[in-house]
Length: 561
RNA sequence: CGGGGUGUAGCGUAGCCCGGCUAGCGCGCCUGGUUUGGGACCAGGAGGUCGUAGGUUCGAAUCCUACCACCCCGACCA
Image (cartoon, rainbow, N blue to C red; front, side, top):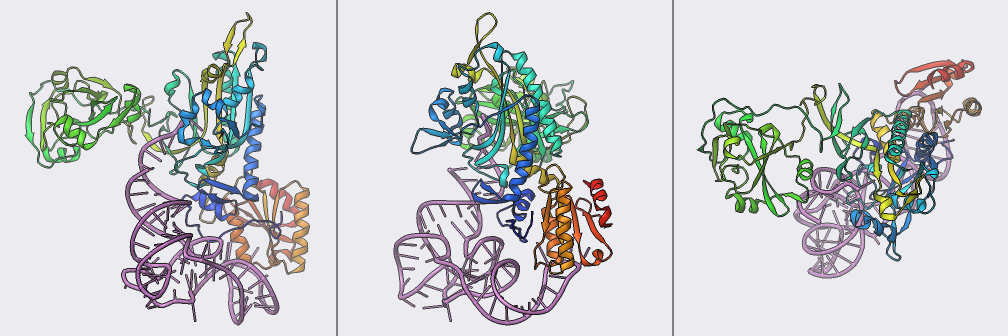
């Protein structure tokens, strides 16, 4: 592809709206342009990368027996009503104004629609159906460029099986395929066991890439590979001690002491001797949640433990319920339900709020003073705590979700009546799994992991071109002729070549563009080397430059690529 | 939806507080010439409803009101 004739609008300056490196570089390299918030066009160079990613995904999906479909983006609303997902998606689902259609954010309904009445015998099963298409979600806040958009390309696959054993197998096929896909794309990723949530017993795994731009927070053990979303992650942490002698409790004046840190400083005690109180409202009733020291309440854990709706109490409510403001609340004299984190189990000689502003209570024995208290794992894991599997240090960081594989079960087949007949002529709902990959996220994550101050550093699998051929002075006829010839020869050798044949640009300009676009190898044709029959070969990843005889160029390229 | 911020030429921005603008600068673009191994130089040139609407004023990019768009933080995230 000749740069002189193709649309690759590179930018020297950093676009003001872009924040994360991949977003900045995708715009600067002329790969994407924003049309509206969360809505992007892929320019030719960027679309070439999208195609490469899709090709890899398609190959691996076909390799496990996947059959590619093309589903409509426009869906009748009715079918979404039947599964109750118009309500479940809420504002995330785009609605068409002048007809009863919605824009599909995913395609379980359509898959079930096609399976219904058509996949009717156990002999028809299993099936793996997939598509690689645009999805629509009315994200309240699109961000990070192409990573969270209102319109995005997703590969989603669905397995149809006669039973859960079949589902297990289909799931494991996808697990393997996903690892191959992300490996081939050259990504550093890890796999997180996600919560089974409301699906109960079903398994779900997320493929994640570590990134500050991520929207999930992950606890990860480098030693044994334990990885979990902090919403469900567990750790080994020091318990509050139970002393042999239990003091009786007593009130302490603590003027202006609000936080645990202030309390510890004021009383010269350790935070392991304190219990922090948080008030939550659960189904309209107050619940006191006691945490050890400065531990944070994990609201996801709390919610799944209590069930129903949970929210933190408002400041006015706290006063009304406890008689004190936040910072002086505690278990002694609290009249409603109390639950506590397991680290506090049976602890004594504790300090906590007195439910009276500017007072705390010491000498609390939870076993004695709050006997009806129940204990649960309610804390949020923090960096440096110990892994529950191997006792190594856990690290907590942000990550981007690239893919998710999920055992759906019979939720959709039951809702839509998608049944098959078994050997005995008995009817059963088809068992489904669903498996997604964000195509743009692979694109963006690769860049997040492979760039330097000059630009992107592609590796061969996703690189839009293998070679960036640079002719330094196209007005010099010898150079122009040699570079043209080289261009055709390299293509004939089977390389994908981006050819900078622009007439007026200075050498530095071309070099910088080449570094920005980031093809794995640059071949530079300039007067200096060409007069001796040489060209320069630069490897983008390590900036290594070598002068190579034209006759030996092909051998050199094979070495690098 | 809450908090903060920004909107001026294709991109990046100055001017806004304290009204006087015929709106400045850099990059890019066009023409001619010189240049060609790390974002060249000279000369000439095109390009703006100053986000939109309304208001205040002799006069508005500048002050006021509403709306819209975009960014960041938070909430939300199947």
